[in-house]
Length: 108
Image (cartoon, helix red, strand yellow):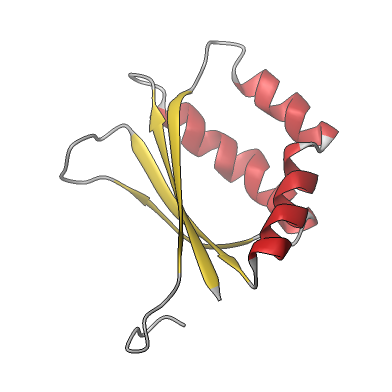
């Protein structure tokens, strides 16, 4: 299993809009595309409290490419994203890393 860690750094005051978009729209579309979220986190103490960090579980990089490309070009997603940003841009920066569990990890 491969885990993708994504960190969305929101523009000031826009984290609530991002969280709402995930809750109302993104998760349903991920279900449609069989994308498996493994956890979502906001920062309690740290450098920025305007971040959403989440993990996605993939069987392989090929699976990720196929499913993420299908999601990112889905017309329902493109429409929903545009609508959610009618009040302005939400995300300032996205960072992504692909991680593999160690032999002693409790998550495989």
